[in-house]
Image (cartoon, rainbow, N blue to C red; front, side):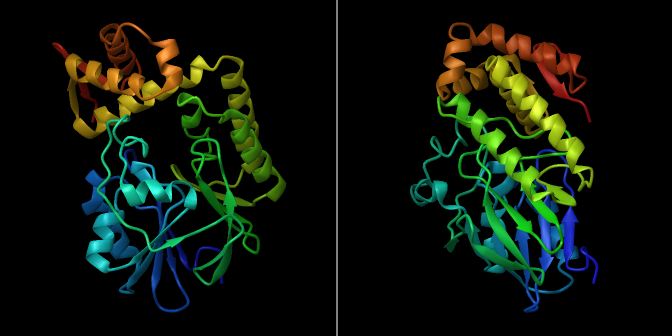
Length: 303
């Protein structure tokens, strides 16, 4: 049996995270991460193809950002499957506090879901006939976890390591430490010496040493000037919202900038006075990056 016989990697484009489907030895199916809610129909279709007629019995979330957990509610309603999440934000899920869960301040959507079990670091999950150890992966999100199968030499890295980079270090925006935690997570991955990484976004890759070297260089660059992380976060959030809405006026962008700044301590330091000017600047950056075109007072996503 090769490494992939029981694993189906559904590589998604933005807005959704990848979905990793496991054909479990009990005849059921587990899926790690469920994408963004506006892609739910496509998520259902892709998982239906991958599960080969087997029942979907379990969702496992590496973390509960909207692009990783947005399909939880819909899939659970459709299949009656369980939802397993890391413990770090379980109380916020119980309360469904959209402010502290980050959904409101990022202007993103995530339908309310409930969970059935918590997965803790050092727990071992049986997925696709293999043992996968839950590992802490703070940095991008303080509660994020990775999944490691030593026998296969395969790491599900979530947003801790992509082939080219990693996710925005969101804790730093809220005045909490995140850079050092991200460095520690990268060090942990280096110690594991995986032969293959399945990231939360992008294709699986095997040149892990090169990805780690680039990621270490990037986190050092961010730590040299923390505003770089805030600038990157604002650009990512704007691009995400534009891809979702397809068209945003400058008034829409201004409202989003204001919401993002109000919810993040670091951004209040860097962008304290003029959301309108910042929105206009971000619109220019989206156009310059080729992600959008201008139509009067609006930006329109490039197909």
